[in-house]
Structure formats: structure tokens, C-alpha cells
Image (tube, rainbow, N blue to C red; front, side):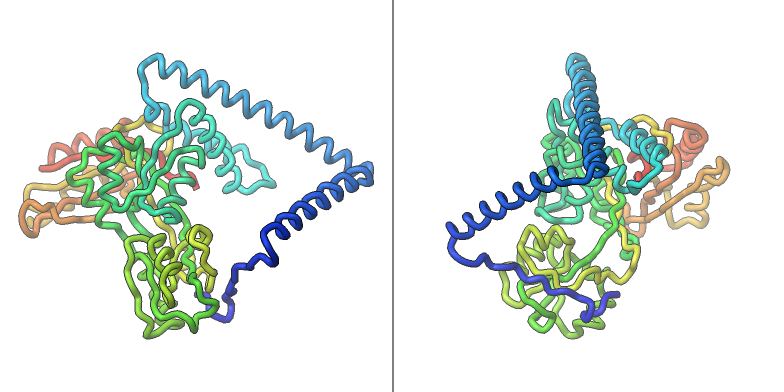
Length: 405
């Protein structure tokens, strides 16, 4: 937990003088910077200049290889177009996961694994977009954690568009208006996002991937200190993730749920006395002062997101499978044990299980289960065959690559 004494109130600086004067000052500063750079190049020691020349040569090689890779991707895309495939079918999550894992295996530093993954993700995103950018829906508006998850998984070369509700993300993907969607499924502190689970009860969409996003919650607003706060606005999940901090540092202050953290940030911008809990991007988008950073109660606070699409994909070598199952009478003794028995028999590791009302009649439930492995490969393939025989409901929601970092 972060105490207010450690917070930094970041005020937006107002430009001094008139607009023409400011423009002239910027121009003079730019000229001075260019002159300094030229002088530095002329006076640089021979050893330093040699390093710079070497870096320039490496940059030229990187640039040439990037364009060579993009050209290869373009030729692959042309081949797929000739087969009648759409832009959505160019994206192969299992192939991208394999590329990222190989990059991590090769990495010997000094760049961190996170930086290597981000760089290769952006390279693949740019290459994929040489034909037609993917259209990906996410829970908006701009500045939400869902948007951050989208960029982490797909890179910045996709065409992301914000949607107001989780059910709208499902609807847009199902209708074909979006190629894929990003939806939150669970948080390591507050648990499952039930709205997302319930959508799978009726939706024909499949799970194509997962994203794990480390969540930092920040307190922000137009005011310069905590004393100016009359109410705190945020998504109910974020309010819950910061409950202890709010109880300790802002006791008695009203907590107002919002449809999203970005909507809370918009209200903080427009309403006197309203502060928001949101991600750093929201502070930038809505021009808010960062009052206190990282106020989440749990240090490793992480949210898991699902990538949803219209088809299943092949195995990547390290996969997870999500199932929706039920039995005829879930109130009978041993029902759940009977359903799960094939996993134990085939030595399948189950990583998650959730129950939800079936909506058929009261006190009847369905189970959402995550297990390790791909549905097309043994031993999971054999275990699922046995599970089907003893289930009244069996649906394979997806087999997809495990999150890379």
C-alpha cells in the first residue's frame, strides 16, 4: 500500500507568453539542439564515434531485415488471399505464440524478456497489417485496461474500437463487424467477471487466446491533493481492488461505481471534487493529475483477459483448454466428482473451475473448467472423450496458447 506522503501531485504546466512567442521559442530550442548535436559529432572522441558508426551499421541491418520480413509476410498474405481467406484468417495465435517463445529462448540480454516480447509483438503486428489491419473490439472507452490488454496481445498496428458493454464485444465479433474481441475474465484479487462467463452460455464464439495484464491502480483528478476529493469514482472491480487503501486514507469519502475506469476518468475531468481510480493511460488521455500511484491492495494484482473469435486454432505446444460442462442433476451427491474423474485418470491438470446458474431451473448449475493441454492432443483428447459420455452438457469453448508473459 502506498501512503499519501509518498504520492506526487503532478500539475500540468501552463505555457508562458503568447502562442507566437511559444512557437518561436520552440523553433530556437530545436535549432540549438541540432547545432549541439552537430558539434557533438564533430568533437566526439574517436572511440565514441566508432561505437556510433557501429550502431548505425547495425540499424541499417535491422531496417533491411525488418523490410525483408514484412515482404515475406506480404507474400504469405497474398497466398492466403488467393485461397479466399479473409484478414481475420491471416491471424494465427498458435504461430505467434511459437515465435514469442523462440524469441525468449534466444534472449541472452541485456534486453529484458518483457522488452523482447513487446518488440517482436510489434514486428508481427506491423507485418500482419501490411495487407489489412485486424479489427478488434474491446471494452471501452479509450484508456481502459482492456485497451492495454489489446495492445499487449495484438500490438499497435491493429484497428481497435471501444464498445460500451461486454455483450457488445461478443455481438460485434459474432456479427463479423470485428475480427476478434478482448474481454476480461478474472482478476487475481477479486475473482471472476461473471458477465463474461454468462455470455458463453449462449454465444457460439470461441476462445482464441489469453492475456495476463499486471494491473496498477492510480488515484487521479483535477485537484492537487487528497484534501480536494469529495468522491472517488471507478469500476466496481477497481474499487474493490483498492478497498483497504481507501478505507485507510479516504475514510468516509463517497465511492461511486462507473461502467469503466476510463468513464470514471472522464467524470473526474468534468466534475468538481471527483477523483478517479484508473490506469496511467487514462490520466494521459483525460489530462488528470496523478495524485497517488499504485494504490491496489495486492502487490501482484493481475487481470486475465480472453481473446474471442469465430473459430478454433491448432496446438502451439503449450496450451490451455476451456470447457463448459454439466450433469443431469447437479444436486446429486458426487456429481462434480464424477464429472472430473477423467482428468484424474488421464493425469490432466485442472487450473480453474467456476460454477454458474444454468438458467434452466433454480439451483441447477453449469461448470466452466480450464485444463492444461490442447483438445486435439493426447492425453487431453482421450479424457474429453470420456467426459462427453457422462455429461448432459459438453461444449469446447476453446483450446488456445497460454499467455506469453
